[in-house]
Structures are given as C-alpha cells and as structure tokens.
Image (cartoon, rainbow, N blue to C red; front, top):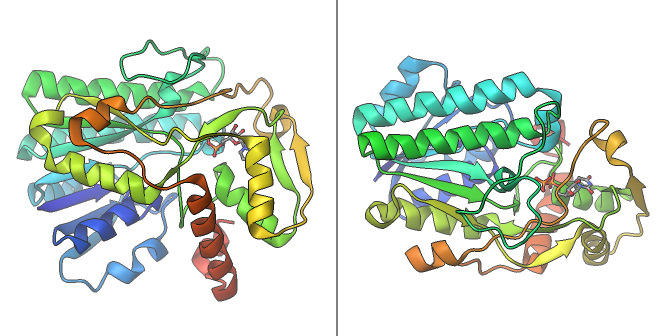
Length: 333
Ligand code: UDP
C-alpha cells in the first residue's frame, strides 16, 4: 500500500511512517514543519520506499500530486497543543478546517482510503466518564479561544463523515486521547515531555491548577498499531468514529510524583494557576477517560503499554537527546 501521511514529520506521523515502512508499505510525507521536525524523519529519507515534501496543505498542486499516487491518506497535519491554539486561534481554524477540506477533496478525486485525526478535546467539558463516541458533546463559549481547537476538529469530523455519506469515500475518524512517547515536544503544553525535561534539568515541575485533574496517557506505539489496523479494514470501519486511548487514569499531581520517582529527580513541584499558565478564564477538563469498546469490537485493538512503560521510554529518549544535544529538538524545548 502507498500511504500519504500529512503531518508525517510530527510526533505521531513519524512513528506511523516507520511502522508502515517496516511492514513493507511505501510512504510519502507532507509536512510544513510548523510543529513537526525534519529530525523526526531524517533517518528515513534514504529508504527506497520513502519520500517527503516540505510544504503546506494549501499548496493544491503538491497535495494533488501526492494524493494521485496514494492508496490511502492519513491526515494528521493540524494545529495542535492547547497553548498554541489559545495563542493563535485564527491560524488554528484555517489550518484545521481548510486543511481537512483540501485533503478530503484530494481523497475524493483519487478514491483514497482516508483516516482523519480528531481529538478527545471534542468531548469538551463533559463530566460523566468514560466518553463514548456517540455521546453528546459539551463545548464552552466561543468567547474562550480554548474551544477553537475542539470546534475546528469537530467540523473536520463532520466534513469526513459527510464525504463518506455523500460520496461513499472510505473515511474513518480517530479521536486520540493524550498520545505520548518519544519525540513529543513540550513546547505547546504536552505535560509528560515537559515534566520529564523539568525533572532531568532539576527545574520545578509545573503543575497547572489544583493538579487534581486527570488524564489517560496512551503510548504512541499502541496508537500506531490502531492506525495500521484501521487502514487495513475499510469495509468494517468506514464512516465510523473511534476513540483511541488508554483507560489507565492518573491525576496530574500523581503524574508529577511518578516522574520524580522514575527520574530520581529532587525537583520541587510548583503549582501554577491556569490564568498564569494559559490565559485568564482558561477552562481545563477535569477528567478524560475513553470508552474503547467500539474499536476493540471492530478491529480487536486495545493498548498494551502502561504509564510506567511510557515514562521509561520518554525518560530514555530525553536523556539521550540531552547527551547528543540534538540542535533541532533543543530548539523546541
Ligand atoms: N499540565 C500541567 N503542567 C504542564 C503542562 C500541562 O499541569 O506543564 C496539565 C494541563 O493543564 C492538563 C494536563 O496537564 O490538565 C494535560 O495537558 P496536556 O497539554 O498534555 O494535554 P491536554 O489534556 O490538555 O490536551
């Protein structure tokens, strides 16, 4: 299979590219390196079944050419990270909505199997966990730019599902719940790489709010396995939305302690009000737990790696990054 990965130089995209190449597929990456990094794919560029274009989705000619050669498109390119989205709401809407529109139009021209990345953010302020794919969604007001991300990804979902219904395009939507692992950068929020870097540097661990909010973190290797299986099963999964995440829940206070323990660091824990960490009036989700029965029943997928394994892998990666003082990733720290 020939797979086009938009956002393929990003954190999830580069892991997916590796896994596809490993199983014998060919891969083209389209990425404008806004939050991705060439370093993430540098080890792949000489491989015979790999190609890349450093370009944005709004270059219709490049997108068209790449789509015309692809059997499948995995659309991961997006404005990501709460901090980035709060700071740049206009760009977030344009990148996410116009970008997805362009990808779906190209996919329709060449009948490409398409996976669209969405996010657990679309569940918004819903309180009764676990979240199921057909639950009602509870977003905050449009006066708070925090909700731009959820609203833009939700529109992407509507576009994808409409392309399936109206044009019979085999589109599947994946809602990721806090995917983590090596290569994720802490610059735009992302709590685990931030805590690990802070712990290793002996700097304070910055816990936002009370720290009693909780999350479920899923290893990127598990997420990639889900994407591979979904790519292979269009008949069963086209026109569907799937949660992809772990249900091992941890509070952010507890996470800070686990990072300290796993790194052996004596960094202090510092609580920072949301208004200082993000923007005045920022609303955080208190709990976020996926119900993953739907994807398990459809393709037999469930996560296999624990939070301890995730922390070990991120710590090992960050230690190595510091020793080799990789200039590219250092830029993003
Ligand atoms: N967070 C934190 N300290 C940080 C970065 C994040 O306490 O330095 C918190 C954040 O407020 C949220 C959780 O950690 O409650 C997860 O944040 P992340 O940005 O990783 O993902 P989110 O769940 O917000 O999409």
